Image: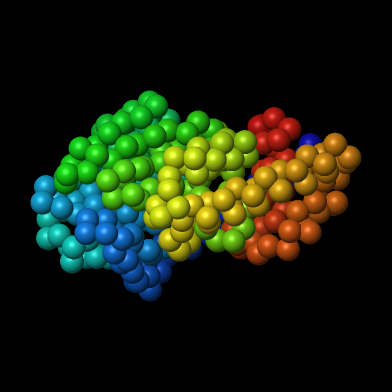
Length: 293
């Protein structure tokens, strides 16, 4: 049984890597679309995590930077907003579709900022001294005072990963959620192997809901722009899925039996090719049972 589970997880992990790799192979086909949110803040949609750009008299900084091969298109889109290179890059977490451009932007003069755990995981992947690594890292919170905005970076432990940061633009009434929020009509990717958990995602989403207004603009890690109502719907869906999974775990015990029972089936939601229902079910199971390894 253990061998079957290990093989299943290995196959699923491999499919994710293939999906992420293929996203970078045809960079020339990707168009970066820019949406203005207020006088200083824009969101850039491409392939990978949504990018926020803050543009003002002091310069430009961005939140996340997608894949390295998309850096020329991203830079071109940013240049239309401000001719100067980005001063800072904030990473919401360590995944490659949010940090893949770190090296390119760092070598162009940007200073990368992220949580301590992002630095740790990127160091494990790229090695000490790599330009992929943040040059500034923080623990619970940090504030960037730039362009007349006091952007608050707040860490939420064991949510999507163990290094998630939500960025609050309090003056502009905008928040960037990173991959704590997948606004795609489905369930989140809970990166259990990266320190994430279902309860952590729920706690983080509820905390943001409690701290923003009905008119706050919410930038998700993936998907179109949203708001507080969208976050509430997302939280309710995850809560329902968690309840279904806990009932299935109590009744069927093993992962194999739970997968066979298909507890998430009644939700009738769509799943991405790189995050099929079987993988979502497996990750929820591992999180809710504490089966991390």
